[in-house]
Image (cartoon, rainbow, N blue to C red; front, top):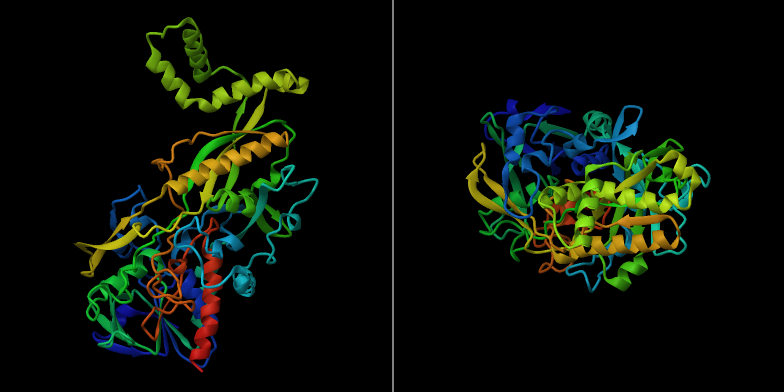
Length: 539
């Protein structure tokens, strides 16, 4: 059943057994796992079934750290959540999201990665990952490249050793959660969904050991309460800490924040377009490295650095996709011409009067210069190349791990939203190792491409300072991190808030580290695990 909360009486109290806040991927998965159980579930969603600007404006906030998206654009505040923003083209007019579990190394405590280590290893989560595959309606739980490549049509790049590997991503459909699963939840007799219901405070007992009820407000003015035995916050890596910090009547620093950890360790997956892959042979197949279908499952290969290399060189986890960029049929370009002018001038020992113009041409056409140099070498060896004078190069799109940083954080500001709640301030901070790992990973890939005769990389990034165009993937992680020690984490190994008996958090905000994989599949796996735990508690 779905109810418009704006129709409820003012100050009405709704009683339930389990209350889930947020109908995004995490909240919908949890509600669906509880469908048909003996206990009653109340699912609260801030928005409706369609987007509206006023509700979306509740996400407005201030960015004061590394440049980031306007906060009201990084999440969708209506039923289905940010699954509405999954927009990768899968063919046949379908849109979706890339999916992959975290790697084994991502769960480990690594001495070169401060604050790393999960309460359990990858093998513990594998059974839940396998169930998550089914929920996301993707292929079998295998990401070994040999299970997805066709040695003839889509072979992996043939490196001569294992320093660089090909990894596989599967892709899921964008409308699964907000369409098919919405219908399932609506039909469940034990689940009631309330739309336009904004939780503005989590109330607890005087000792803050038990949550008693939630205060909920509608933008149209009416307010109501929800009481339950168990409460689960599933509103994302920014709104979850915001709600805990706002709930400060009993604990002045906010619920669960006795060790000043709520909102800290904000992590993203640094994304960066940088670098060029220049193949050595026009016949090298890169078909595996674009989105294609295998046994009706959309998949894509990416390049990664082997775990043993990450350990030896003390790097963060890393992957890169390659994307066709240019086809050159002529060597003529402003950049190439200006490069020749500057080179001749340097050889003569002087500089042209229009030096700055030529330098600008060189900088903006570095790809053309790289291709021109490549063409000169290839002309010596490949008669077919002489006839075609055509080459395809590839831009690199990096998606990498960020080291946990306590100074990268979410805090409250004095500005208030339409519900009178303090807005958010995000200070996204990166560390030198975040960029250094990207540079070194490219160097390793370049070494192995050359060793295998597959071409080379033109590496554009050399400074460890995060470039302004380094951005995130809307992957908000770490702000209510998981750890068995309450001095090191907000939630325990079961995602229950330390010190509070009946308050849980679902979503990627509990990730201690984030690897490079999109957090969706791991979020779904953790929620399935939480659902099993909650069902036992409700017996």
